[in-house]
Image (cartoon, rainbow, N blue to C red; front, side, top):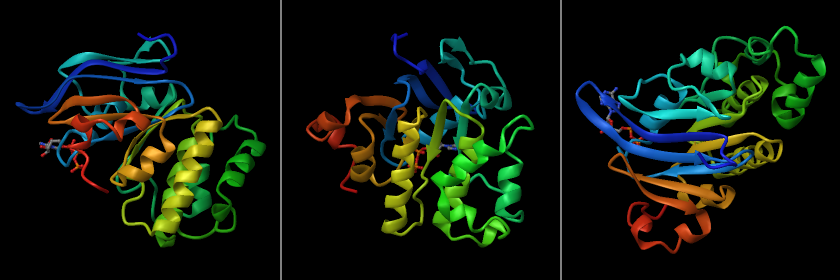
Length: 235
Ligand code: ATP
């Protein structure tokens, strides 16, 4: 595996029942880097995130996190090792308050100061600790999902369509938060329908088509790559 890789996926093949979806997929995520995972509907992006997080078992391939083989670990063990999924449609408890959602994620040994630092990154949450999470706006709920993920001290966050249904202004704020988290040392593999905008924050990109990698490389050259462009539409 490449020397500077944090997460590597190699030769990954997976599907549902007897229908294959992913075919020998190779992906590398460097430390503290945002990586876009793009491709047309049905290409297998969500399926890949599910396999990486351990929710779906691959039929072949290898997954390494920080040099360690995690291919056979259960999802919660992967999470303990720093691999965290924010699923499409948010990973929060809507009937609990904001404060309760966060507290559930705070390990007993964590200092109050650390929760404070996370809340500084997401100021909107600090003023709404007693509000029931399900009554937050869509953007606020996504901020809460991100804050919960960050409290788990992840190395890599897998982000599935975090901008779904949000107003452009909120998407900007969320993408800013993703950039700040990368600067703080967290890597992310980001599935996103807003192709141009996500490419602005991700230096690296992969394009999946029909379950295989159709492009991998810098986001800058992706714009000039005809093969990749034909799979991306004009979002
Ligand atoms: P989109 O951009 O539309 O969300 P995607 O790239 O995330 O698409 P996936 O959701 O990974 O694509 O789906 C890949 C393929 O796997 C599709 O053909 C889909 O119908 C199929 N698929 C997804 N989930 C299941 C499932 N639970 N059982 C059977 N087939 C599934």
